[in-house]
View 1: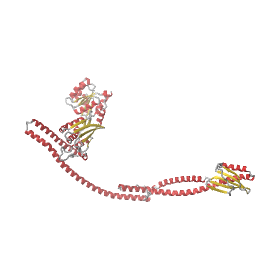
View 2: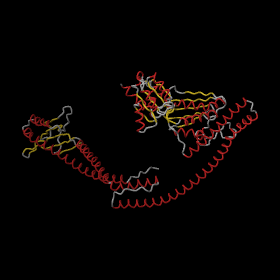
View 3: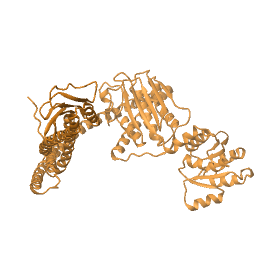
View 4: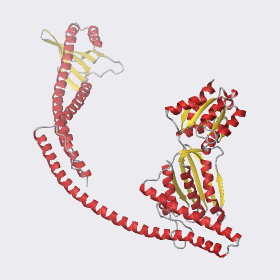
Length: 625
């Protein structure tokens, strides 16, 4: 079936205007062409007729005196008219008297006898005969043959008319396109809005009103219809949404109740089971100690078992408390400068006994340089110990566990992998939900409430990091990837540590009873090329300063044995330390505290917590001298 193309209103109006213009132009062009060709033909004939009369008048004496030479000379004058191809003079008896041809190569064949006076057009040739008379007596006939450019004239005129028609049609199309907008634009706007309403089911759409008259009335009526349909559709949609919300709320509530009930039963059963498990060996060990008080080896073994089971119970209770804090939004972390190596070591100590009990092979790979984080060391240790504890529990005896620490961009990436039972693909995300365990069967060989991974992920997120799991499937082992971000200040410090200062290092004394802070800060400054001596109290720092002669001394105020004020006075009393820059590091920041520090001999007063940038900033003036 042929496809019928339906023209738009805009196209129809333009076609109508073009068709009318074309018909008018075609009629005018035909009339002008006919007039032009007739006028051109007559003008050409008149011109040749005039030329023939001139030749006839000039040749009459030559015929009277039978002077053929003069007749030839008269015809030779025709060469000034390039359009005349040939000419001839016939005598009164009709015989050829003289002839002329423009081209010797194309010399025409002249007739033996002339025709009657008149003209004949044959293709592109004009042939004309004109009588030669003198005082009413016919002396002969002039014959002229000329080129008639009628075809060239026709083609030239047609090309001009064609160009005029094309320009006229283009102008007409432009004018029609401009004029038709008043009609087609409102109609197209109505059509477009109708299509959008059908496609999007949006009855709030309206047609912009830019017209008056019948078209404007049509647009107003269409908009009014859409308003009414929109109002009724909105009422119906609102009723449907209310019904859907009520149904959804009821379904969700029902599902939540069923899930909560099932989770409650599972959790209570698991909790009872996990709490009774440690109690059984503890009770047995108490019986052994009661019945065999003299067996020292048995007593020692019993204490070891009881301590291990007690730690398990404490771990369960701690996890339950942390879960409660998560649910109530009260779980918080205490951020401080923390060395990752110390966190990893604490986590390894927490799980070492379990790893040795299962005879696992534990491999730890860490960078040699110190890695500083801003976080809660206790919670970070809890994350790693939970992950290592899971790896030890879910790996068959004699398995392999690997802990790897690497630096990637602005993150610390910790990977804990094992050769254990693995995780099914559908459980990869579910294991991070509360109370979900990989093995929930009665025959499972592992203990736990199913909250460790959920708690570890939440703690990682509170530190601005993430925790994800990977596994090749059941029996393929598993890998947990913990990502923790650097702080901006510590990242800059590590970058500085990667570029040693060489000979620009300084002698620095650090004194603080916060061992983790002063040791980590000392290690970081040493990695930057400085010579650092660390003291954990005022007396130790004073003794070290006498031999070390530091250029800078960063001193805590509240230290045991000798406080920072007394230490500063003692250092100022040493002649060799008159030019040492003393910097107080304290949690007291009132104006009176600054004045007391200045009176004691301190040059700078810094309020805790201090960053590595603040420490380095104090070193810059002397480094530039």
